[in-house]
Structure formats: C-alpha cells, structure tokens
Length: 228
Image: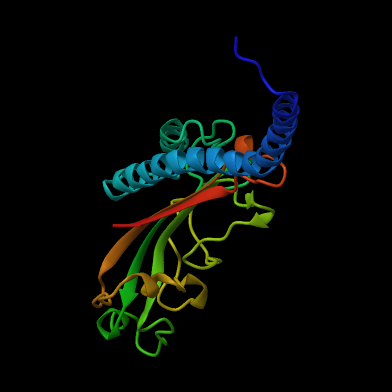
C-alpha cells in the first residue's frame, strides 16, 4: 500500500491555502474587468442598434416624413424602442422643438445648405448677405430630452449650438442674413466642400444607457451622426 510522507501531507495543506488566497486576489482584479467587458459589450450591441435607428430616421426624413408632427415622432419612438425616447403626450399640429420631455434620448433632424455668391444674389438690393460662404440650417427639428446627460455632462450637437428662429414647421427664418442660422461645424465633415446652393441632411441621435450604469463603471451613452 502506498503511503504519503507526513511532510508532503503538510505541504499539500499549505498549498491549498495558498491557492485559495491566490484565487481571491485574482477575483479582486478580474471582477472589475469582467464587469467592464460586460457593460461595454452590451453597449457595443446598443451602438449598432443606435446607428441603425439613426439611419432609418434620416432615410425617412429625406423622403418627406415630417418630424414636427406627433405621428412621425411616435414612429421614431417605436424605431428607437429600448432607448427611452420620450415624446410626451399627444399634440395636434406641429412642434419642431418638442425637446423638454425627459427620458434617455435626444434626436435632431436638420436640413442645411451652403451659401455662395449666387445664393446671395437673390437678396434684395442693399441687403447684406451675412452668411455668405458658410453652411446654414434651412430646417431644424429636435425632440426628446435636450438636457440629456451622459456621464454627468449635458450632451451637445456635434454641429454646434443652434439658436436661430424657426416657424411651426421647423423652417429657419432669414438663413442668409441671421448669424444664428449658421451650422458652425458642418464644413468639418466633408473633404469636398459643397457647391453654392447644395443641400444636405442630418440625422443625429443621443442615447444614454443608465440601466447598465454600475457605480464606478458608468455605462455612458451613444452618439450617432449621419449625413445624407
């Protein structure tokens, strides 16, 4: 019969204690990494979904869907289901700035144009073309939660802050003469500048993901921007 030397038996007991201690140390370091990987893995899935939502909203926008109406914004809420887009209670008519509804999403739809000398020539004689050689908003619509915060910081459009005047359809007034109509950052997204009078469209979304926020490992949020 095989016997185990007492010294070797003592060494094996000590090894068991060392292995437990090593496992605890390993778990302390690996658990945060595991949580980080889990959260960011789910956020990667959400990012792909968010990009699809942004493209779908932009595609509908350029094909004439009027996102100043509650019906159209309801469609947007269904497309972005799971992201917490809140459009409030039903309203009649048009609302291009339905952006104080809370929730975890903010969406911008905009049409813009490059103003050159030819476009400025349509102004009455003596009227200064303040926005010549700049990109300007022709239409600006936003809805959801404009004060949305991600990681404690309020979101801001990548296009710059818009403070121009719009009518009930979101159409921008005096876009050739009002400096507030300028799309400050539009030009940074194109290698080839637009020609005079050329028009483009923007679909921009912000989605926070607080459901995945775990203490020191915040889930953050997702920003998606598409040009058409």
